[in-house]
Length: 113
Image (cartoon, rainbow, N blue to C red):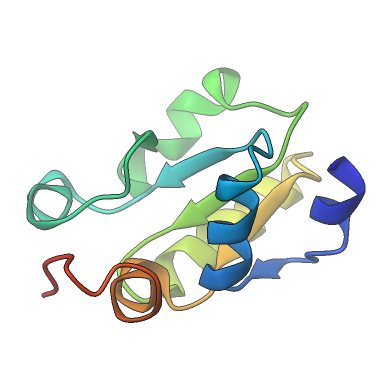
């Protein structure tokens, strides 16, 4: 299943992530939004570390399985994914469209902001 993740490249679509979750593919979903944003809506089992705090938490992030980074629309998470890749995280993937795309495509009942 790791080969499937390697095919994702630097960005993953929300539908692809949902299928991986349904298939039980081991991964970590890193939510880099601020706590007030996470309070509005979140994806279960996400690791929440605000973007500005990620550099202090590098030692806590997995390198052995895919690390999917998300924010509201995908811009901040793309910056974090690039930062992580520059720091040796070859497993970092940005969630295209962020949690907003997740709410529109995967979970229409989820609150949006």
